[in-house]
Each structure stands twice: as C-alpha cells, then as structure tokens.
Image (cartoon, rainbow over all chains, first blue to last red; front, side, top):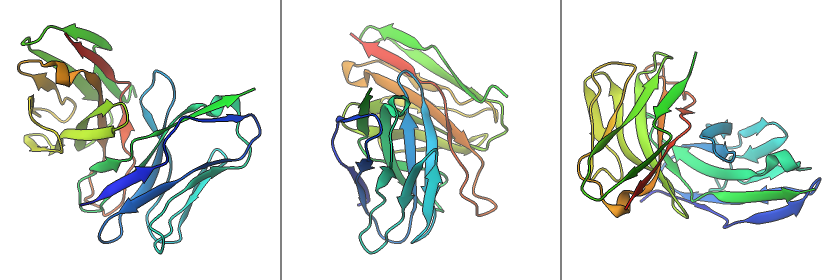
Amino acid sequence: GNSVTQMEGPVTLSEEAFLTINCTYTATGYPSLFWYVQYPGEGLQLLLKATKADDKGSNKGFEATYRKETTSFHLEKGSVQVSDSAVYFCALRWTDSWGKLQFGAGTQVVVTP
Amino acid sequence: NAGVTQTPKFQVLKTGQSMTLQCAQDMNHEYMSWYRQDPGMGLRLIHYSVGAGITDQGEVPNGYNVSRSTTEDFPLRLLSAAPSQTSVYFCASSYSRTSGRIYEQYFGPGTRLTVT
C-alpha cells in the first residue's frame, strides 16, 4: 500500500544552520506531495506543495523538489531561525482521493539560539 | 472568516462515556475530514465527507460516527470512549476536486482528548 516515511526526530540545530528533513514515499502513480508545519499548540498549516515530477515548492525560505526517480520530497532550508521550531509533516494525496491526505510520522525540529 | 473552528479544546472522559467533538467552517468548503494525531504515527484519517449528506470511512473509523447535515458542520461522535481513543483530534476542510485543482486543506486548532 501507499506510505510516507520521514526521518525521525527530534532534529536539534543552531540558528542559521542548514536544515534537511528527508521524506520518501511508496505509491503507485503520481500523487501530489505536501509539507505541513505544526507550531506548538496549533493545528497544521500548509508549508509548500508540488503536484508533478520535478516541481519545486517553496515558501518562507523552505524548498522541496518532487523527485519521481527517487520517490522523494526532501525539505530544506538554508538558514533556520528559532521561530522555525515546529513539527514538520510530509504528506501525499491523490487527485481523485477527495482530498484525503496520507501523512508521515512527523519530524520535530528544535532550533536553539 | 473564522476558518475552521473546533470545540472543545480539551476534554477528559471516563471509559464508556460518549461525547461529540464539534467542527465548523465558514469558507463554504465541500470537503471536510477528521484526523487523529498520535505520537510517532502522524495524522490518520478517521472519517470524511464530500458534501452535505455524504460521509465515508477513512483509515481508522472504528468507535467513531459522523454526520453532515449542513455544509458548515461536521461533528465527530465517540459512542463509548476507550483509553485507546486518547489523542489529539483535528478537523480539516477544503474545496472539492470538481475543477480538477488541488486545493489546500485548512486545519482547525485541535481537540485534546484524554480517556481514563
């Protein structure tokens, strides 16, 4: 069946460090891919998305590229801030799935001053 | 717009009790869904609805009921609470796929439920 695998956290890094969170998926066909962010005590917010192979999603300094050949959608940010401390979820969704999202387990990121 | 609202924010139940988690949206979204969030497991889909009067099961529907009598509201009912239902529950909504586009899902702030 379909699945989404994320690197385990927590990931702890210093301010201005480079962040990578790995995400791979197994699925037949070509789903849309998403990164959601959850700040402490809040619901999930869409961070970025990509709907076809080689698409690059970007937002707030974060980027992720839809790699069909490696079935991956790794999240990157060149210089993190303390305010980026949150839990990040990778997710996939089929166009004809009426919006149903399949999530990875989430990766907690802690950025220290 | 208030977006997606959920009540209550916190709830403690005893085993066997029943309750309803409320979810409402004011964006005229056709699609609404309920997820539960458990440590190390991400979010899992409980039930979803593609419009008023239409609901369907997700990945983990057992022990939960839903109904969709209006576009705005999508309550989740726990019929007989069990400790395994201790979790954080999120409601989400979006436009439907009728235009073929992928629309963003908007999430509510969540309800933290503890069953003792």
